[in-house]
Length: 481
Image 1 (cartoon, helix red, strand yellow):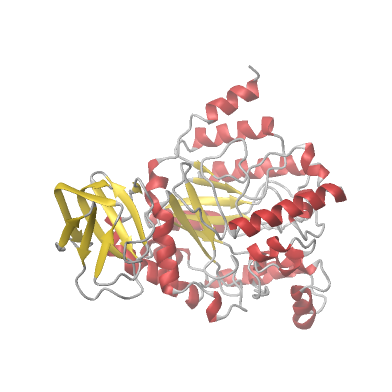
Image 2 (cartoon, one colour):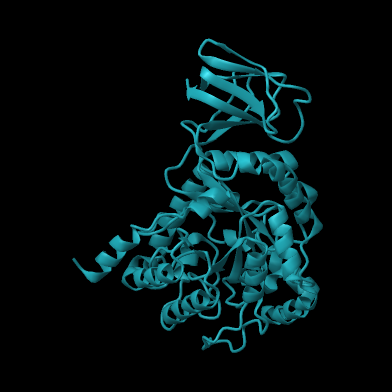
């Protein structure tokens, strides 16, 4: 057996650690020089753009962190906005404004905010596709000198987050770096064709090793692809697990192969973009392809319809963007009911929610619209943490009660938790059968009246039964119907 095969087999013996499976909620932070202009169009969601099949779809990206790429399309909304507000100012100058904003940054206040909302881990974007590094990297960029933060933002946030009792992880854009390849990326084919080669794979690996050595991240989150073949990537993973045995690797590490270079050919690009469009229409979001190795899957702005055997996390922003978008309207943000129900739906299907926060680039503050949603999560989760964290999927994720109320289930030991969305006075849990040991209580432990009939449990809920928060029932001593 070849060495690389032995390495890959050894990697597959790694198991997702319990801390990650128990966490249920993490915070993503996108905070790049693009958060200074803070502009992206808000009319389209990313899934709609991918489903369109257009070769220039990403020019209309709702993600502000892709502002630099959007500028490469002269007729894009971002390019028009830039000409009107900044003239011919180059994108690179926004880094100066971003650095000035650090004067008012309080990493401890961020960490306190994230802990208060109920998150158990934080993943910071250390380098996005623009190549700007949020730590003073000693790995020299051969194409753009000084394209880093002199202040160790990664290190300071890591210290603050861990001080608040949370795990800390890093995101690294391994697949794209505009300082090595700045070709316009309008579709998935052109995006994959822009994965740099040459001196970039060694640069990317050196930076990831530097991040591991300096910060020991509990999550190593790559994006797009990896610029080197698998035989070079597997030892990097082994090195990471040696340094962080209970670390977690996401699923966006598809190793480079000659097939990626083929995406530069027009016929191949057309076939790939058509396949991506079909997938986006079906999945209503982005579900990365499975690489040869990963710990957790990361669907973007979408979820799975059923319980997944593989651990996964839904990755999404609080509005349509990851980076801060000053153009977002009230209707673009997650509503109270939508946010909380999405969270319990993900938990019931063996997932975590990695909810993004996009701070302002001008003053390093978290916008109030985003803070409000974090407060909603914290207010609901804090008294119910024991009914969510540490749970595992039950025999079914749930669907609807006999009365039509949406219901989801999770379990821990002998307890089953039923999460109900805006139930009426009575709900019949068709998936649940009683036993001689059955009891039903509210989230706070108070007993609730129930009856048994026709192989299902009917629960009479105390008022008030409506509202925008999921109602949680604790079922003890029940079987699946």
